[in-house]
Image (cartoon, rainbow, N blue to C red; front, top):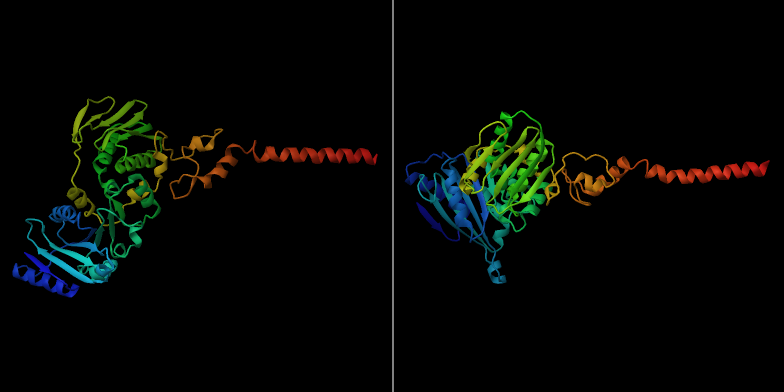
Length: 384
């Protein structure tokens, strides 16, 4: 059932939702959460299609916020709310819940949280998803403050790696990214392979497309968990193509060349094929809606430091052994951002003092002490 409302209000939209449920013979609400999608006119169809697919697993009220502030001063002066209400029963775009497309015109687009707040399901969790153009700090966004979980997608940005750095600096409990969700099968398969082979990991290599944030997150996760150097290599894709773990017994390799079927090679065991197909946005969204608590594994990985996996330089989770060039030994470029959001300049003086204490500060103090000793001897001779 579709209901079009022009120049309406949130209270009228609520009334139409109740009326639509009664006409379908289901006055009671059986939805488990409210999913708020913040998008634009050009991308709302694909986002709504993915959300409707996820709602078959998680019946929810979907609120699609489409901001249309207008380009001319006359358009911006018009404050109007248009809505399209869809109530479905598991078939078609409406999914198995309720869908409301909100088009906010004029300055009303700047106050979308005031329109969304009366439409939230009572006593139900709220999830906000930005398919594209996510705010710099989702937790401080007006709509983000209403949600327990905030979902972004670094792959939809112009600078995916830069977006991950921004997510790390502004992370708050409840934040997550679909780039992290995409590597769940990879993490599961690698963890299972390590359970089968009880041996120490010495290094790792992750191969994937150049502008693929999932490759960066997988590299960060391996570096943070294994505490070994991780090298990031560029491949033609699609997505992540291979992960290689070097051990004392040989190499553990998970290779996926076609984006669907992968080959797992473990030393001492026959090679076998495993299903590792790239998933749709609806499947990724459904996975994120299964858990509404903070994702601690994502927080530790994204805040580990993207700059440690840049180019051919390996990621060193722990400081390297003392060397003449501390910055090169640690694998962190000068001025680069470290795991906890600290910059490399904070670690610079400390590294210099640790590695070059005898030849740095102490060496600089010895010449002064020698001059004082020489003056003391000359004064004694003069006194005699």
